[in-house]
Length: 303
Image (cartoon, rainbow, N blue to C red; front, top):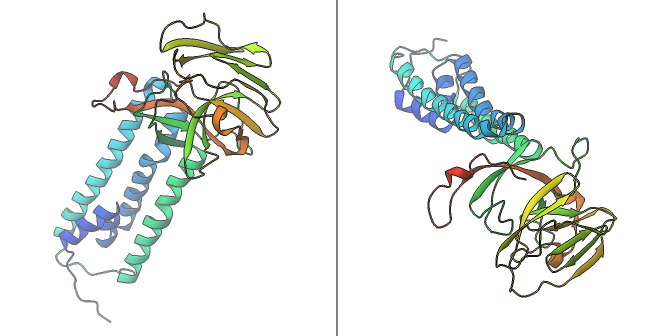
């Protein structure tokens, strides 16, 4: 049976590429071009960001990530423009046998509700996830308004990186499993953790290596093995109860670096190791809650 000409409609082609990169090319009969545009968009908006965050030197991560996102945006815009222009040239277009409304719906559903979300979910769960910091509990190293990358290849079956003392960990809050918290790991199973004012001891070893603070908001340096980090202890605030606990099997003792401004294991107890899902890596963007971008924090490595 003869199939009558059905001129392609430029506006429809543009809108189809707007809702899904490459979709307008499929409508125009350019299936290969549409597939490559879709794959390019998916790779640049997901896996390439993971590669940049995990494998490139810290100073390069923000730049390469931004370039990847801009490239993905460029592919999206190019797809819309190309779909519009190609449709305008196809005034005498004869649809191919597979170009049916049901096929278009199926392609949209598979790509937009299965393929793209699956790739993004895999990257976020197993490779790299982005988090926004809403509070100052991890000051001075991590500030409210920081956006950071977390390595999700961490503390999981088959992962090569286990939880260590001093890690800045992302975990599920024990009292509300819909929330993620970020704290520093202080004690592992079997460790004895003792806290007396600003002094923190792990297995009898004092972490604090500077003089006892005498000023408000004094910054202290803590060390364990070859690792060190800064913490803040605000003198003169209500005293936090002393702690003397042995970390149970399968648990970790966590604390915020802002010792007087953090809800942590001193309040809600130890955290199950299986609930620790990521390790903070670096800050990729930062906005001051009072206004303005903190450019100097972009690309900082989390110690």
